[in-house]
Image 1 (cartoon, rainbow, N blue to C red):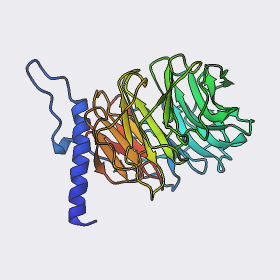
Image 2: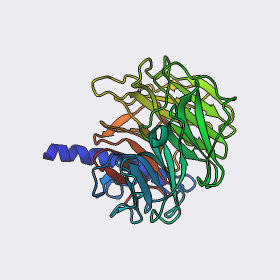
Image 3: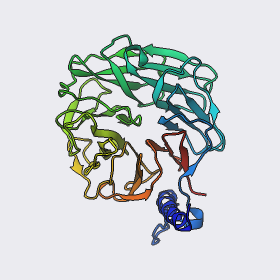
Image 4: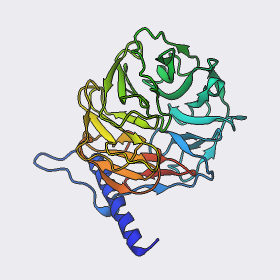
Length: 365
């Protein structure tokens, strides 16, 4: 890399780190204004050595030391030292599976979702850090294709499938993923022709609080977000301003910092197609969405609020990372590395993952 390239990277790294440091700063004393840490105390994306070329679209950091990643070729990795080393804890015989989502409870417990038509869609669970795995669900309906998964707490979770008989199918667990049941679809609105979810980042189904959950869609005449406030029994659908009308366009990732404030990212995932409107925000739980005034400049698949921040968030995609400091209204590209998904932890770390074994960590030194 040229010296100019190094300079640009240091500037982008400092900007991300300064925003993260600001969210982590101690509360100001009376009469004082909180300020971000200096550059020497701020950090940016640091690639970690994974030892694999798998593509990781599933990511579940627990804290700044512990994280799980799930990806192609049946690969599951776990770190307990902040990414300095990763242990391959892939389920035996899973080499043909495509893991696109992982939800972790702690350093020992996690649930992974494999996607695909029919029996390719499966859920596996571990309670011993990946030493052993138990298959707790295998889809037997050839019409179903599961995309994403979310948990409200350690016991209650949902997974979603593309429409079956004209409606999205929701799978529910009440025992931490040990068993699953298909929910009745009477409260699910009809899907649009050609509409589906995108298994791009593990963020097409997300939750906030004990009962609220949102589902992102694309491929239809309009790109929509569906919301349920009763753990998936009844839903309402809202049109978003994202590009639509093509199987490659729609909403790809969602993040809610509470049951009201959310950010959506997406666009058109094809490399040769522009994504002029790749971001939107809501302040009323998804009842309405408004386009970002300055959206990310290209397709983005993952998004996450920075820890303890009301306004700062990161969005990632194959062409870079973008930062917002005003709740998603405006975005600025701060890194050009390729990532598919991003997530942050309450204790102040953010993680990103993507193609060619790329997993990175962002933290304040």
